[in-house]
Length: 432
Image: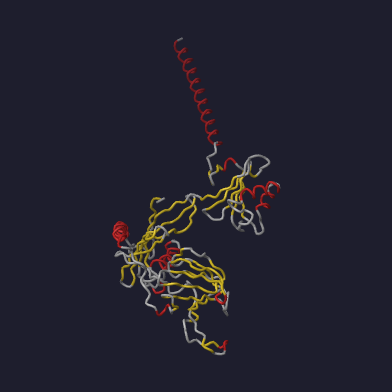
């Protein structure tokens, strides 16, 4: 009798536990189902995109703001009202560029009515126009992250090929060749076995979109038996002027570039006794230095300075004139268009205009004119000054600033035993 009672109790307990386990399984299963339907927030442009039907496209040739909204069932009276309200922030009717992306945020229903238009003139910048209830327009920028990295390389052929084999941006080569070592190393004549180390910053938008090399913080180059350090340092906080200096605080650049063109040829030199057949072989002094290049080629400021003229006049055509200091002034003639305005401060290498044929000219070129103490002279015959050195008040600060950076550069080792041109790139923590 007791045995039968024990068996019965065991069966009841097992049934109870089985039901409990089944209930737990069903409950857990139900929780898993609930977890699957909970959407993770998806923020972009400051909006949770999960709350909208999102339509993305690019501006087509001939597109207007009105046509885009009309295609998406917004009537013209409302379109006109939106454009009028928004134009003080961004003239959307005039400034849409073909190929640039835009996004429409639409109601999450069967009508899919647009409530917000977002236009991206660049990877970083975007314009928001909201028009659900009231109209609001503003511009903003996507979050940017800077990641500091280091790299080393050993030259076998040229700097560009070396960086390509390392999987590094060619922009690094341009910065080293044009901005840092342009006056101390001829990058067309690098030797096999030359080697370099560099500390640089990469730029990312929204944490994941690579936007290229931001800048180079420091570099070290071994060339022809010389060891050349370079450190970036801000010397003018007001105008944001940064230069590269060596470990002894000497400027790496010269005061003036040799040419206002990165690519072009010297077609006519300064010559006060030049004779021109077109004018009956009479002497027509040429007080400029001509550099020929195709129309549209960028023209650079050869030194830091302030634009004192950006206009068009007579045979000069469209031109820019820059005062660099009390002694030196330069002028750039025959532009197709200028890229700077009077009163603007420009830095050496900034694009100030583009090659053209305005004024008296028989072909596309820039006539580069150079003044010293108010008199036009031949820039190639001048003993031009060194670039401005670090002021005495900043020198000690600079030397203290570069001390840990130099120690870090010195600790980066070359992978001599590894395959040729293998990179030693290290990704650091984000710096902002």
